[in-house]
Structure formats: C-alpha cells, structure tokens
Image (cartoon, rainbow, N blue to C red; front, side, top):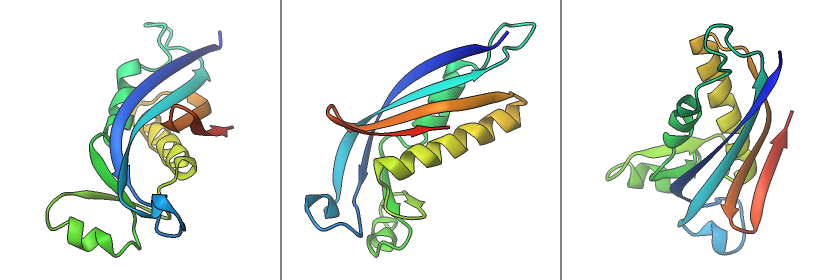
Length: 134
C-alpha cells in the first residue's frame, strides 16, 4: 500500500542574496512556510510512513537562524556574534527547497525510512514561493 503525506512548517530566518541587485541584497528576514509532500510504503507495524515530528525537526534547524551564501563576506563578521548557516550559493527559496530535500533524505536514510519526497514548496512571503518536484 502506497501512501502520501503532507506537512507544513513555519520558520523565521534572515538571509540576503549576495549576487542580487535590489533590496534582497540587504540582510532581511522572512516568515517562511515550508510544505512537504512525501510518499511511500508505511511501516507495517505502525502504518506510519514518517513521523511528522521528524519533518518538523529537520526544517526547524533553520528556525531563527541567519542563512548566507558561504562566499558572503558578512559570514565571518556575523559569526563573531551569532551562528551562521551557510549555503553553496545564495539562499534563495529555490536553493532552500533543494537543501531541505537533501536534509530530509538524509534523515530518512538515518532512520531506515524508504520514502520519496514528491514535492517541496518554500514560501518567502504569502504571495511568492519556489516549488521543487521530483
């Protein structure tokens, strides 16, 4: 029996886009809404594909964090006062969707869960999101 699940998580982060010309080049914050769709065969004993709290824990590592391109010159200065999560490029909603996907797959591997992520949406605002589908 194949099942699909959906989980929505809200986090607050700050970021800036190093290679962008415009106001998003400034350090600023968002209330991100992350939506995750997963599918697969549930565990025969529990009938659970993946515990919703696992999805939330994976995403919550970004909550109330500063996320910057690893090449951003602000990283070293901010790290003097606060931890910084760095990304291999500008931390756009598109890139964050891919990073969260990879984090979720790593958590599934660690827990022995055979699940597929069919879609992730990362909303930067109520009117703008990136959607990654597989």
